[in-house]
Image (cartoon, rainbow, N blue to C red; front, top):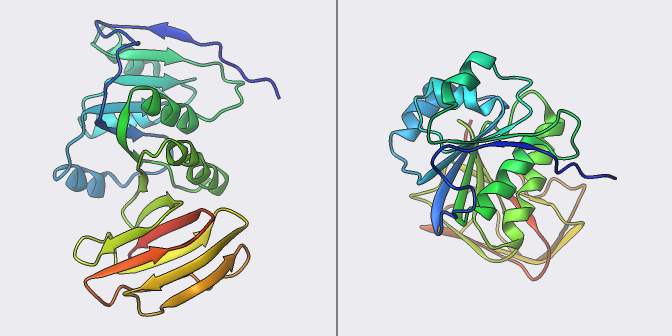
Length: 236
């Protein structure tokens, strides 16, 4: 498959080669965002750099969130809105509509290139389940570079794990923790501090054994020997 790297670049005062080292980066992308929830959630968060991927610019603008970098083919962005950001201290990258990678994929790549120490994505879920599943898998790029990466909406915090995870009950996103293998199998899975514990278990794709567990101690520990897990901290 041919990969399109052709893009148009517009730069304000910021040099695109300047990396933002060891910074928390927020990505707005074009799925669904509950703006009431997002506005309240953002009040308690602080990010050092913000990337808007295509339609994600609409959400960032509506939430009055300062944007540092914009990318996409802009098929879902009003031209007047994009013009608003031209001339500001914002990097604007334009990709062709016919490209191999999604805007979210490109945004995660950009965050990694900018030296992110943590990536948080809003708008990565929605009615298009194909995009949602792709966005979850796209987090492997961050996983392979050992950068924590999270997809968050009003009901879920989703991330990938290839090694031990400890979740403090007092800090978990919701009441439930679900585990789904991203790799074909996950071996040696041990869960401690959970209502449904496991000891050296084999989990493989196609089974629902990892759904809707609960932390019953101060923290829940997820240990395994090999594989990749999708971890969901969820609430109803």
